[in-house]
Length: 269
Image (cartoon, rainbow, N blue to C red; front, side):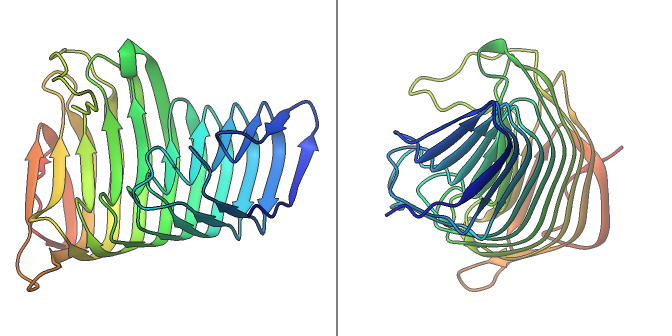
């Protein structure tokens, strides 16, 4: 069942139904409200080369085992507000790829699915740029990742000025993850020196339980290390037994503020 209400300020755009439940392309001033999207074969709601987008009070549903059923997907889109949404899919609840900027995601209930992701970026040596993203006041439950930044080796560009804050995790695998070695191919990806830069990223007021022993995983490039990262008031314990989780950092520098559990593994800047 699909119940739709949307308003488009600038009419020279394309909106259609298909494998993706609803797709907007080349649109400006789009407001999507009070929408229920259920069981699209692929992405549920997508925006490509759009600006001034609002998506709120949405209910987005797909089976937990359905591949590539991202709830809300942004590509080359800017000035976005995604608020007050319930998203339960088989892939990312919210995902952002190349050339997205000025994105505010707030008050999202996410799960199951793959969490909230920036990326993947830089596939096939492309240049991708994502900046000025705020993810605030979210509940993630039984997701396979929490908040994630992922990029391919060999890519170019950057992911910078990103803030994830006030997030509650419940039985989430990989609650905080940065991966500059992302590869979803059946065979191992070749090592490459170039990488998408990850810089100025804050994880603040993130608490809850991790379904994996390693609650924080930050794996960065040898040649383009992650810089200016911040862990502030993080408290993540194991879902089973409430014991200590661990943190792993590679080629990542920054600082910790307040209490950070598991203890910060960031190298000093």
